[in-house]
Image 1: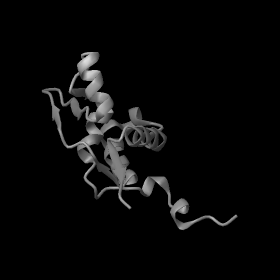
Image 2: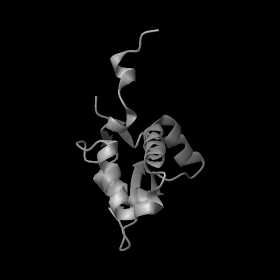
Image 3: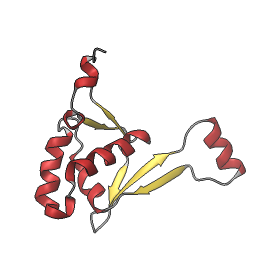
Length: 115
């Protein structure tokens, strides 16, 4: 079976791009993403179930450190260098954690990867 060029690229070379631009940081540096709940089902849930128009997602310490580093230029490996420098051994296993974190962000539509 022949692998396509797309599948042969190392995941750590992917460049994440934020899809959520509304966010804030508190006095402790904790990042909160503001997610607007759009669409027909969300509008129904807002009216019938009193669901909020905006959801607030609070990132943990490492996520709050990583989020501002997602600039559409750095790949996951490059972001990992900053994380390792900042967190040291607490970041280990570094690239496994980062890969999982970026997969989660992508699954929720918070990031995409540069093509």
